Image (tube, rainbow, N blue to C red):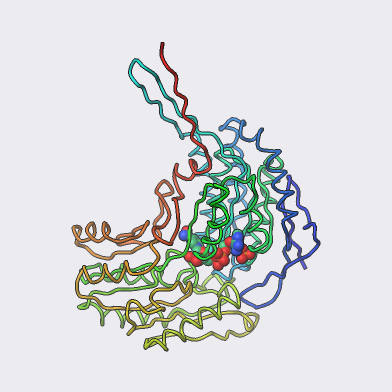
Length: 481
Ligand code: NDP
Protein backbone atom coordinates (compact mmCIF):
# COMPACT_ATOMS: atom_id res chain seq x y z
CA UNK A 1 0.00 0.00 0.00
CA UNK A 2 1.28 3.45 -0.91
CA UNK A 3 2.73 5.45 1.97
CA UNK A 4 2.83 9.21 1.52
CA UNK A 5 5.78 11.17 2.87
CA UNK A 6 6.34 14.63 4.22
CA UNK A 7 8.10 17.17 2.01
CA UNK A 8 10.78 18.78 4.15
CA UNK A 9 13.92 20.61 3.05
CA UNK A 10 13.40 19.65 -0.59
CA UNK A 11 13.05 15.91 -0.09
CA UNK A 12 10.31 13.40 0.70
CA UNK A 13 10.79 11.94 4.15
CA UNK A 14 9.06 9.55 6.54
CA UNK A 15 7.67 10.98 9.80
CA UNK A 16 10.19 10.89 12.66
CA UNK A 17 7.84 8.89 14.88
CA UNK A 18 7.33 6.25 12.16
CA UNK A 19 3.56 6.24 12.67
CA UNK A 20 0.96 6.38 9.87
CA UNK A 21 -2.75 7.12 9.50
CA UNK A 22 -5.02 5.14 7.18
CA UNK A 23 -6.33 7.12 4.22
CA UNK A 24 -9.79 6.09 2.97
CA UNK A 25 -11.39 6.17 -0.43
CA UNK A 26 -14.87 7.52 0.45
CA UNK A 27 -16.47 5.87 -2.58
CA UNK A 28 -15.50 2.37 -1.42
CA UNK A 29 -14.96 2.82 2.29
CA UNK A 30 -11.58 1.09 1.87
CA UNK A 31 -8.15 2.17 3.04
CA UNK A 32 -6.08 2.80 -0.08
CA UNK A 33 -2.98 4.58 1.23
CA UNK A 34 -1.35 5.75 4.43
CA UNK A 35 -0.18 9.16 5.44
CA UNK A 36 2.42 10.26 7.98
CA UNK A 37 1.08 10.72 11.50
CA UNK A 38 3.55 13.54 12.03
CA UNK A 39 4.10 15.39 15.28
CA UNK A 40 5.78 18.54 16.55
CA UNK A 41 9.24 17.14 15.80
CA UNK A 42 8.41 16.97 12.09
CA UNK A 43 6.94 20.48 12.26
CA UNK A 44 10.17 21.69 13.90
CA UNK A 45 12.27 20.11 11.12
CA UNK A 46 10.01 21.76 8.54
CA UNK A 47 10.25 25.09 10.34
CA UNK A 48 14.07 24.91 10.50
CA UNK A 49 14.25 24.13 6.77
CA UNK A 50 11.90 27.03 6.01
CA UNK A 51 13.87 29.39 8.25
CA UNK A 52 17.15 28.43 6.54
CA UNK A 53 15.61 28.97 3.11
CA UNK A 54 13.99 32.30 3.99
CA UNK A 55 16.92 34.73 3.59
CA UNK A 56 17.73 33.59 0.04
CA UNK A 57 14.09 33.14 -1.08
CA UNK A 58 12.97 36.50 0.27
CA UNK A 59 15.84 38.18 -1.60
CA UNK A 60 15.32 36.21 -4.82
CA UNK A 61 14.21 38.57 -7.58
CA UNK A 62 10.44 38.53 -7.90
CA UNK A 63 10.81 37.70 -11.60
CA UNK A 64 12.65 34.52 -10.62
CA UNK A 65 10.08 33.59 -7.97
CA UNK A 66 7.37 34.25 -10.54
CA UNK A 67 9.05 31.99 -13.11
CA UNK A 68 9.27 29.14 -10.61
CA UNK A 69 5.59 29.43 -9.68
CA UNK A 70 4.71 29.47 -13.39
CA UNK A 71 6.70 26.27 -13.81
CA UNK A 72 4.68 24.64 -11.02
CA UNK A 73 1.45 25.79 -12.71
CA UNK A 74 2.62 24.27 -16.00
CA UNK A 75 3.40 20.99 -14.25
CA UNK A 76 -0.07 20.95 -12.67
CA UNK A 77 -1.52 21.39 -16.17
CA UNK A 78 0.74 18.68 -17.56
CA UNK A 79 -0.51 16.29 -14.86
CA UNK A 80 -4.13 17.44 -15.02
CA UNK A 81 -5.69 14.01 -15.47
CA UNK A 82 -3.52 12.29 -12.86
CA UNK A 83 -4.27 15.01 -10.28
CA UNK A 84 -8.00 15.00 -11.11
CA UNK A 85 -8.19 11.26 -10.56
CA UNK A 86 -6.24 11.52 -7.33
CA UNK A 87 -8.50 14.31 -6.02
CA UNK A 88 -11.63 12.39 -6.92
CA UNK A 89 -10.42 9.18 -5.26
CA UNK A 90 -9.23 10.96 -2.11
CA UNK A 91 -12.23 13.22 -1.58
CA UNK A 92 -15.13 11.37 -3.24
CA UNK A 93 -15.91 14.28 -5.57
CA UNK A 94 -17.04 13.52 -9.14
CA UNK A 95 -14.06 13.29 -11.48
CA UNK A 96 -15.82 15.78 -13.76
CA UNK A 97 -15.71 18.41 -10.97
CA UNK A 98 -12.05 17.76 -10.19
CA UNK A 99 -11.24 18.07 -13.91
CA UNK A 100 -13.16 21.28 -14.49
CA UNK A 101 -12.82 23.11 -11.17
CA UNK A 102 -10.33 21.83 -8.60
CA UNK A 103 -7.25 21.14 -10.69
CA UNK A 104 -7.55 23.99 -13.25
CA UNK A 105 -8.08 26.41 -10.36
CA UNK A 106 -5.02 25.11 -8.52
CA UNK A 107 -2.91 25.93 -11.59
CA UNK A 108 -4.73 29.28 -11.91
CA UNK A 109 -3.84 30.14 -8.30
CA UNK A 110 -0.14 29.72 -9.02
CA UNK A 111 -0.36 31.72 -12.28
CA UNK A 112 -2.39 34.47 -10.68
CA UNK A 113 0.11 35.08 -7.88
CA UNK A 114 3.14 34.47 -10.11
CA UNK A 115 1.99 37.46 -12.16
CA UNK A 116 0.40 39.36 -9.25
CA UNK A 117 3.72 39.81 -7.49
CA UNK A 118 5.12 41.51 -10.60
CA UNK A 119 2.41 44.16 -10.33
CA UNK A 120 2.47 44.85 -6.60
CA UNK A 121 3.53 48.41 -5.99
CA UNK A 122 3.93 50.45 -2.83
CA UNK A 123 3.00 53.97 -1.89
CA UNK A 124 5.04 57.14 -1.60
CA UNK A 125 3.57 60.03 0.39
CA UNK A 126 5.05 63.45 0.04
CA UNK A 127 4.83 65.99 2.93
CA UNK A 128 5.50 68.81 0.50
CA UNK A 129 8.85 70.39 1.32
CA UNK A 130 9.17 68.78 4.76
CA UNK A 131 9.65 65.07 4.08
CA UNK A 132 8.88 62.16 1.84
CA UNK A 133 7.58 58.76 2.96
CA UNK A 134 7.79 55.54 1.08
CA UNK A 135 6.50 52.14 2.12
CA UNK A 136 8.41 48.91 1.78
CA UNK A 137 6.48 45.61 1.71
CA UNK A 138 8.71 42.93 3.10
CA UNK A 139 7.98 39.20 3.30
CA UNK A 140 6.83 38.35 6.83
CA UNK A 141 8.99 35.24 7.37
CA UNK A 142 7.99 31.61 7.65
CA UNK A 143 4.26 31.32 6.99
CA UNK A 144 1.97 28.60 8.32
CA UNK A 145 -0.78 27.45 5.91
CA UNK A 146 -3.52 25.05 7.06
CA UNK A 147 -6.29 23.92 4.71
CA UNK A 148 -9.45 21.76 4.75
CA UNK A 149 -10.63 18.67 2.86
CA UNK A 150 -13.44 19.94 0.66
CA UNK A 151 -11.45 21.53 -2.19
CA UNK A 152 -8.08 20.05 -1.26
CA UNK A 153 -5.54 21.22 -3.85
CA UNK A 154 -7.53 24.28 -4.82
CA UNK A 155 -7.59 25.73 -1.29
CA UNK A 156 -4.08 24.53 -0.43
CA UNK A 157 -2.62 26.40 -3.41
CA UNK A 158 -4.84 29.45 -2.73
CA UNK A 159 -2.66 29.99 0.37
CA UNK A 160 0.70 28.65 -0.71
CA UNK A 161 0.89 30.55 -4.01
CA UNK A 162 0.55 34.07 -2.53
CA UNK A 163 2.84 33.18 0.38
CA UNK A 164 5.62 31.97 -1.93
CA UNK A 165 5.09 34.82 -4.40
CA UNK A 166 5.36 37.33 -1.55
CA UNK A 167 8.76 35.89 -0.61
CA UNK A 168 7.73 33.89 2.47
CA UNK A 169 8.83 30.34 2.97
CA UNK A 170 6.08 27.98 4.08
CA UNK A 171 5.22 25.18 6.47
CA UNK A 172 1.90 23.79 5.25
CA UNK A 173 -0.55 21.16 6.40
CA UNK A 174 -3.31 19.77 4.19
CA UNK A 175 -6.28 18.05 5.79
CA UNK A 176 -5.37 14.58 6.96
CA UNK A 177 -8.61 13.38 5.33
CA UNK A 178 -7.49 14.44 1.82
CA UNK A 179 -3.67 14.52 1.71
CA UNK A 180 -3.03 12.99 -1.72
CA UNK A 181 -2.86 15.96 -4.09
CA UNK A 182 -0.73 17.95 -1.62
CA UNK A 183 1.69 15.02 -1.64
CA UNK A 184 1.65 14.95 -5.46
CA UNK A 185 2.23 18.70 -5.45
CA UNK A 186 5.40 18.16 -3.42
CA UNK A 187 6.67 15.87 -6.18
CA UNK A 188 5.86 18.54 -8.77
CA UNK A 189 7.68 21.19 -6.72
CA UNK A 190 10.79 18.99 -6.70
CA UNK A 191 10.45 18.54 -10.47
CA UNK A 192 10.02 22.30 -10.93
CA UNK A 193 13.29 22.95 -9.11
CA UNK A 194 11.81 24.86 -6.18
CA UNK A 195 14.79 25.50 -3.88
CA UNK A 196 14.90 23.24 -0.85
CA UNK A 197 13.10 24.43 2.26
CA UNK A 198 11.00 27.04 0.43
CA UNK A 199 7.86 24.92 0.72
CA UNK A 200 7.50 22.22 3.38
CA UNK A 201 4.42 20.01 3.65
CA UNK A 202 3.80 18.14 6.89
CA UNK A 203 0.99 15.58 6.92
CA UNK A 204 -0.96 14.54 9.98
CA UNK A 205 -3.73 15.39 12.39
CA UNK A 206 -4.88 18.94 12.98
CA UNK A 207 -4.65 18.67 16.75
CA UNK A 208 -1.01 17.61 16.44
CA UNK A 209 0.56 19.09 13.28
CA UNK A 210 -1.86 22.01 12.85
CA UNK A 211 -1.60 22.88 16.52
CA UNK A 212 2.24 22.75 16.42
CA UNK A 213 2.31 25.14 13.43
CA UNK A 214 -0.15 27.48 15.15
CA UNK A 215 1.77 27.52 18.43
CA UNK A 216 5.26 27.77 16.90
CA UNK A 217 6.79 30.94 18.34
CA UNK A 218 8.78 31.75 15.18
CA UNK A 219 5.98 31.37 12.62
CA UNK A 220 4.52 34.90 12.56
CA UNK A 221 1.65 34.43 10.08
CA UNK A 222 -1.03 31.76 9.93
CA UNK A 223 -3.43 31.39 7.03
CA UNK A 224 -6.19 28.95 7.95
CA UNK A 225 -9.30 27.68 6.17
CA UNK A 226 -11.65 25.33 8.00
CA UNK A 227 -14.41 25.20 10.56
CA UNK A 228 -15.37 28.13 12.80
CA UNK A 229 -14.70 26.16 16.00
CA UNK A 230 -11.19 25.20 14.86
CA UNK A 231 -10.59 28.81 13.77
CA UNK A 232 -11.59 30.06 17.22
CA UNK A 233 -9.10 27.64 18.80
CA UNK A 234 -6.35 28.87 16.49
CA UNK A 235 -7.17 32.50 17.32
CA UNK A 236 -6.93 31.72 21.04
CA UNK A 237 -3.43 30.32 20.62
CA UNK A 238 -2.21 32.90 18.12
CA UNK A 239 -3.50 36.05 19.85
CA UNK A 240 -1.04 36.21 22.77
CA UNK A 241 1.78 35.47 20.33
CA UNK A 242 0.64 38.47 18.22
CA UNK A 243 0.53 36.43 15.04
CA UNK A 244 -1.04 37.77 11.91
CA UNK A 245 -4.11 35.63 11.18
CA UNK A 246 -6.22 35.01 8.12
CA UNK A 247 -9.24 32.87 8.97
CA UNK A 248 -11.64 31.56 6.31
CA UNK A 249 -14.33 29.72 8.25
CA UNK A 250 -17.77 28.18 7.97
CA UNK A 251 -20.94 29.46 6.37
CA UNK A 252 -24.71 29.01 6.25
CA UNK A 253 -25.36 30.93 3.10
CA UNK A 254 -28.75 32.30 2.03
CA UNK A 255 -29.96 31.84 -1.56
CA UNK A 256 -32.68 34.48 -2.03
CA UNK A 257 -35.00 33.94 -4.99
CA UNK A 258 -37.37 36.71 -6.02
CA UNK A 259 -40.42 35.94 -8.17
CA UNK A 260 -39.15 38.13 -11.03
CA UNK A 261 -35.97 36.07 -11.59
CA UNK A 262 -35.04 34.25 -14.78
CA UNK A 263 -36.59 30.99 -13.62
CA UNK A 264 -34.71 28.48 -15.78
CA UNK A 265 -31.32 30.05 -15.19
CA UNK A 266 -32.01 30.28 -11.45
CA UNK A 267 -33.22 26.68 -11.25
CA UNK A 268 -30.16 25.29 -13.01
CA UNK A 269 -27.72 27.29 -10.92
CA UNK A 270 -29.58 26.61 -7.67
CA UNK A 271 -29.05 22.90 -8.28
CA UNK A 272 -25.31 23.62 -8.46
CA UNK A 273 -25.23 25.97 -5.48
CA UNK A 274 -27.12 23.37 -3.44
CA UNK A 275 -25.46 20.09 -4.37
CA UNK A 276 -22.09 20.69 -6.07
CA UNK A 277 -19.36 18.67 -4.40
CA UNK A 278 -22.14 16.98 -2.37
CA UNK A 279 -22.86 20.37 -0.77
CA UNK A 280 -19.38 20.34 0.72
CA UNK A 281 -18.42 23.82 -0.46
CA UNK A 282 -18.31 26.64 2.07
CA UNK A 283 -20.09 28.84 -0.52
CA UNK A 284 -23.10 26.56 -1.14
CA UNK A 285 -26.47 28.20 -0.59
CA UNK A 286 -27.99 25.84 1.95
CA UNK A 287 -30.89 28.08 3.02
CA UNK A 288 -33.14 28.78 0.05
CA UNK A 289 -35.65 31.60 0.51
CA UNK A 290 -38.31 31.90 -2.18
CA UNK A 291 -40.72 34.79 -2.70
CA UNK A 292 -44.17 33.39 -1.99
CA UNK A 293 -45.76 33.76 -5.48
CA UNK A 294 -42.98 31.53 -6.87
CA UNK A 295 -42.80 29.09 -3.96
CA UNK A 296 -44.94 26.21 -5.23
CA UNK A 297 -43.61 26.38 -8.79
CA UNK A 298 -40.03 26.43 -7.55
CA UNK A 299 -40.59 23.66 -5.02
CA UNK A 300 -42.08 21.33 -7.61
CA UNK A 301 -39.40 21.94 -10.25
CA UNK A 302 -36.51 21.86 -7.79
CA UNK A 303 -37.60 18.66 -6.05
CA UNK A 304 -38.09 17.04 -9.45
CA UNK A 305 -34.55 17.91 -10.45
CA UNK A 306 -33.13 16.87 -7.08
CA UNK A 307 -34.79 13.45 -7.46
CA UNK A 308 -33.06 13.03 -10.82
CA UNK A 309 -29.63 13.75 -9.33
CA UNK A 310 -28.33 10.31 -8.44
CA UNK A 311 -25.25 9.56 -6.38
CA UNK A 312 -22.75 7.49 -8.34
CA UNK A 313 -19.17 6.29 -8.61
CA UNK A 314 -17.03 9.47 -8.51
CA UNK A 315 -14.67 7.93 -11.07
CA UNK A 316 -17.48 7.75 -13.66
CA UNK A 317 -17.45 10.68 -16.11
CA UNK A 318 -21.22 10.97 -15.90
CA UNK A 319 -21.49 11.18 -12.09
CA UNK A 320 -22.57 14.57 -10.74
CA UNK A 321 -23.04 13.61 -7.08
CA UNK A 322 -20.18 11.73 -5.48
CA UNK A 323 -19.37 10.32 -2.05
CA UNK A 324 -19.35 12.13 1.29
CA UNK A 325 -15.76 12.68 2.37
CA UNK A 326 -15.72 10.47 5.48
CA UNK A 327 -17.87 8.08 7.44
CA UNK A 328 -17.86 10.48 10.37
CA UNK A 329 -19.02 13.38 8.18
CA UNK A 330 -21.72 11.19 6.61
CA UNK A 331 -23.03 10.42 10.13
CA UNK A 332 -23.01 14.13 10.96
CA UNK A 333 -25.09 14.99 7.88
CA UNK A 334 -27.59 12.20 8.61
CA UNK A 335 -27.88 13.40 12.20
CA UNK A 336 -28.83 16.87 10.91
CA UNK A 337 -31.52 15.35 8.67
CA UNK A 338 -32.90 13.58 11.76
CA UNK A 339 -32.74 16.86 13.67
CA UNK A 340 -34.64 18.64 10.89
CA UNK A 341 -37.46 16.08 11.25
CA UNK A 342 -37.45 16.54 15.03
CA UNK A 343 -37.72 20.27 14.52
CA UNK A 344 -40.87 19.80 12.44
CA UNK A 345 -39.38 19.79 8.94
CA UNK A 346 -40.88 17.81 6.05
CA UNK A 347 -38.40 15.97 3.86
CA UNK A 348 -39.59 16.58 0.28
CA UNK A 349 -36.96 14.32 -1.26
CA UNK A 350 -33.86 12.41 -0.22
CA UNK A 351 -32.98 12.15 3.44
CA UNK A 352 -31.30 8.77 3.26
CA UNK A 353 -27.96 7.13 2.82
CA UNK A 354 -27.55 5.60 -0.66
CA UNK A 355 -26.43 2.02 -1.10
CA UNK A 356 -24.57 1.55 -4.39
CA UNK A 357 -23.57 -1.78 -5.89
CA UNK A 358 -20.24 -3.18 -7.01
CA UNK A 359 -17.01 -1.46 -6.00
CA UNK A 360 -18.87 1.38 -4.33
CA UNK A 361 -21.01 -0.88 -2.11
CA UNK A 362 -19.08 0.17 1.00
CA UNK A 363 -18.99 3.89 0.12
CA UNK A 364 -20.56 6.83 1.89
CA UNK A 365 -23.30 8.40 -0.22
CA UNK A 366 -26.32 10.53 0.71
CA UNK A 367 -29.30 11.48 -1.46
CA UNK A 368 -29.83 15.15 -2.34
CA UNK A 369 -32.15 16.25 0.41
CA UNK A 370 -34.74 19.06 0.33
CA UNK A 371 -36.60 20.03 3.49
CA UNK A 372 -39.43 22.53 4.07
CA UNK A 373 -41.55 23.70 6.95
CA UNK A 374 -38.80 24.82 9.32
CA UNK A 375 -38.64 28.15 11.12
CA UNK A 376 -35.69 30.35 10.20
CA UNK A 377 -34.09 30.23 13.64
CA UNK A 378 -34.15 26.47 14.30
CA UNK A 379 -30.81 24.66 14.57
CA UNK A 380 -31.14 23.11 11.09
CA UNK A 381 -31.36 26.63 9.66
CA UNK A 382 -28.64 28.09 11.85
CA UNK A 383 -25.85 25.47 11.94
CA UNK A 384 -23.55 24.47 9.10
CA UNK A 385 -24.41 20.99 7.78
CA UNK A 386 -21.93 20.96 4.88
CA UNK A 387 -23.70 18.24 2.93
CA UNK A 388 -26.31 17.79 0.16
CA UNK A 389 -29.08 19.21 2.33
CA UNK A 390 -31.06 22.40 1.73
CA UNK A 391 -34.11 23.97 3.33
CA UNK A 392 -36.89 25.89 1.57
CA UNK A 393 -38.59 28.87 3.22
CA UNK A 394 -41.15 31.23 1.64
CA UNK A 395 -41.05 34.99 2.27
CA UNK A 396 -43.27 37.97 1.47
CA UNK A 397 -41.08 41.07 1.76
CA UNK A 398 -37.47 42.15 1.35
CA UNK A 399 -37.36 43.21 4.97
CA UNK A 400 -38.51 39.80 6.09
CA UNK A 401 -36.03 37.84 3.98
CA UNK A 402 -33.14 40.07 5.03
CA UNK A 403 -34.03 39.29 8.63
CA UNK A 404 -33.92 35.56 7.90
CA UNK A 405 -30.75 35.78 5.81
CA UNK A 406 -28.81 37.79 8.39
CA UNK A 407 -30.00 35.79 11.39
CA UNK A 408 -27.08 33.34 11.63
CA UNK A 409 -23.68 33.70 13.27
CA UNK A 410 -22.17 33.33 9.79
CA UNK A 411 -21.63 35.83 6.99
CA UNK A 412 -19.68 34.17 4.22
CA UNK A 413 -21.66 34.25 0.98
CA UNK A 414 -25.10 35.22 -0.31
CA UNK A 415 -26.93 34.62 -3.57
CA UNK A 416 -29.67 36.86 -5.00
CA UNK A 417 -31.92 36.03 -7.96
CA UNK A 418 -33.86 38.95 -9.44
CA UNK A 419 -34.11 40.91 -12.68
CA UNK A 420 -34.86 44.12 -10.75
CA UNK A 421 -31.57 45.99 -10.72
CA UNK A 422 -32.53 48.35 -7.92
CA UNK A 423 -33.55 45.48 -5.71
CA UNK A 424 -30.36 43.57 -6.48
CA UNK A 425 -28.23 46.50 -5.28
CA UNK A 426 -30.48 47.21 -2.29
CA UNK A 427 -30.45 43.62 -1.01
CA UNK A 428 -26.73 43.16 -1.75
CA UNK A 429 -25.96 46.22 0.36
CA UNK A 430 -27.91 44.93 3.33
CA UNK A 431 -26.83 41.29 3.28
CA UNK A 432 -24.24 40.59 5.96
CA UNK A 433 -21.96 38.49 3.75
CA UNK A 434 -18.44 39.00 2.46
CA UNK A 435 -19.22 37.57 -0.98
CA UNK A 436 -22.46 38.18 -2.87
CA UNK A 437 -23.49 36.75 -6.21
CA UNK A 438 -26.39 38.23 -8.19
CA UNK A 439 -27.90 35.92 -10.81
CA UNK A 440 -24.89 33.61 -10.66
CA UNK A 441 -22.87 31.50 -8.25
CA UNK A 442 -19.20 30.65 -7.85
CA UNK A 443 -18.18 33.06 -10.57
CA UNK A 444 -14.72 34.01 -9.36
CA UNK A 445 -12.38 36.80 -10.33
CA UNK A 446 -9.21 36.13 -8.35
CA UNK A 447 -8.57 39.88 -7.95
CA UNK A 448 -11.63 40.34 -5.75
CA UNK A 449 -11.61 40.09 -1.93
CA UNK A 450 -12.63 36.65 -0.73
CA UNK A 451 -13.78 35.97 2.81
CA UNK A 452 -16.51 36.27 5.36
CA UNK A 453 -18.03 38.56 7.99
CA UNK A 454 -19.08 37.70 11.54
CA UNK A 455 -18.02 34.16 12.50
CA UNK A 456 -17.20 33.22 8.90
CA UNK A 457 -13.75 34.63 9.22
CA UNK A 458 -11.22 37.35 9.63
CA UNK A 459 -9.39 39.10 6.81
CA UNK A 460 -9.74 38.54 3.09
CA UNK A 461 -7.91 36.34 0.64
CA UNK A 462 -7.61 37.07 -3.07
CA UNK A 463 -5.95 39.80 -5.10
CA UNK A 464 -3.24 41.96 -3.61
CA UNK A 465 -4.79 41.52 -0.16
CA UNK A 466 -3.42 37.99 0.02
CA UNK A 467 0.05 39.11 -1.05
CA UNK A 468 0.02 41.92 1.53
CA UNK A 469 -1.13 39.49 4.21
CA UNK A 470 2.14 37.63 3.84
CA UNK A 471 4.13 40.89 4.02
CA UNK A 472 4.95 43.50 6.62
CA UNK A 473 4.57 47.13 5.59
CA UNK A 474 7.47 49.32 6.67
CA UNK A 475 7.29 53.08 6.26
CA UNK A 476 10.46 55.07 5.68
CA UNK A 477 10.20 58.81 6.38
CA UNK A 478 13.01 61.03 5.05
CA UNK A 479 13.23 64.63 6.18
CA UNK A 480 14.18 66.98 3.40
CA UNK A 481 16.74 69.52 4.47
P1 NDP B 1 -11.51 21.72 10.20
O1 NDP B 1 -11.60 23.02 10.92
O2 NDP B 1 -11.85 20.50 10.93
O3 NDP B 1 -10.04 21.51 9.62
C1 NDP B 1 -9.37 22.42 8.78
C2 NDP B 1 -7.87 22.16 8.86
O4 NDP B 1 -7.41 22.50 10.17
C3 NDP B 1 -7.50 20.70 8.65
O5 NDP B 1 -6.25 20.63 8.01
C4 NDP B 1 -7.43 20.20 10.07
O6 NDP B 1 -6.66 19.04 10.20
C5 NDP B 1 -6.78 21.38 10.75
N1 NDP B 1 -6.96 21.42 12.19
C6 NDP B 1 -7.87 20.74 12.96
N2 NDP B 1 -7.69 21.02 14.28
C7 NDP B 1 -6.67 21.90 14.34
C8 NDP B 1 -6.02 22.59 15.41
N3 NDP B 1 -6.37 22.42 16.68
N4 NDP B 1 -5.01 23.44 15.13
C9 NDP B 1 -4.64 23.66 13.85
N5 NDP B 1 -5.19 23.02 12.79
C10 NDP B 1 -6.21 22.16 13.02
O7 NDP B 1 -12.39 21.92 8.88
P2 NDP B 1 -12.74 20.81 7.81
O8 NDP B 1 -11.49 20.22 7.26
O9 NDP B 1 -13.78 19.92 8.40
O10 NDP B 1 -13.37 21.70 6.64
C11 NDP B 1 -14.70 22.05 6.60
C12 NDP B 1 -14.89 23.47 7.11
O11 NDP B 1 -14.11 24.37 6.35
C13 NDP B 1 -16.32 23.93 6.96
O12 NDP B 1 -16.71 24.59 8.14
C14 NDP B 1 -16.25 24.91 5.81
O13 NDP B 1 -17.24 25.89 5.84
C15 NDP B 1 -14.90 25.51 6.01
N6 NDP B 1 -14.43 26.09 4.77
C16 NDP B 1 -14.36 27.45 4.67
C17 NDP B 1 -13.98 28.05 3.49
C18 NDP B 1 -13.87 29.53 3.37
O14 NDP B 1 -13.27 29.99 2.41
N7 NDP B 1 -14.40 30.32 4.29
C19 NDP B 1 -13.65 27.24 2.30
C20 NDP B 1 -13.74 25.83 2.53
C21 NDP B 1 -14.11 25.28 3.72
P3 NDP B 1 -7.42 17.60 10.27
O15 NDP B 1 -8.06 17.41 8.95
O16 NDP B 1 -6.32 16.65 10.53
O17 NDP B 1 -8.40 17.69 11.41
